[in-house]
Length: 348
Image 1 (cartoon, rainbow, N blue to C red):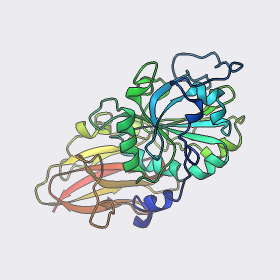
Image 2: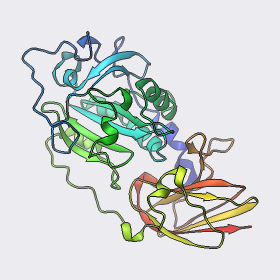
Image 3: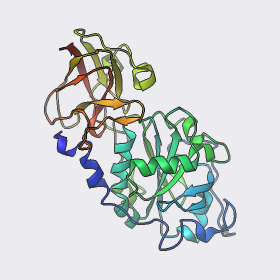
């Protein structure tokens, strides 16, 4: 990828979205009134459901007493209202986007969906952003989730925003749901029967949200296979998916590994002076890796004075850049692509 389109250009491209899901003067669900259950029509009964989130099953009737919209307005939102209430009559489906504040791939993922918001709204799909974990690994409230999503989307995104600490009837519902194998995750719920008809989690796959909104009865099948698997992963796979447990690179000792799912690979560099990292892999349309410096305090890419990520993200085989001093780096797949790689740190 050329540096002009990753990750900074995503801000301008994806901010072209986006009306207010709440109408002119009301937050979504205001017409429901009352408590989190709203004024549900008597003839409408929520479908029989399981108690957790499974693909091809009915999602439980979750609710939030203090959801937010893109204007910061607070209102109750419930899946029962979404299914039954006239306030949501214009919608046929619900996109649920599950992310975590510490997740390195989540900001770009949310910006991508945010960039489709106007199209999805027109196709009858409402977006629900769920923050499942904070940067210190606790469950966020809806207020915390809204603040982080505003930062991620640069205050231009729409959708409804909730935190998993406020999910009812039990908090941390999404964090512990079997279908949420990692972050980001995405699900589409068909409104007429509240069935989860499409899902994306740690598999290297981006849901075709627009196509799903247009055809809620299609079989969306399985995600395409990854370009690598567990046999290609580095010895530190698992711990290095988390910045807090990243291994330390040894200068001159190549590391063979792979980005084979949505989880990027973190590594620590403990060189006091100048150094270079070389990331070797075979580029392709679905095998495009990048390497950037990670800001552990901010929980996002470290950027230069122009707002560009510090690192290497070209459209060719291999990536390489130089830096100075101790740092943490992150290898991730552009657009969630996958590939095995060899990473080498050289002390200059």
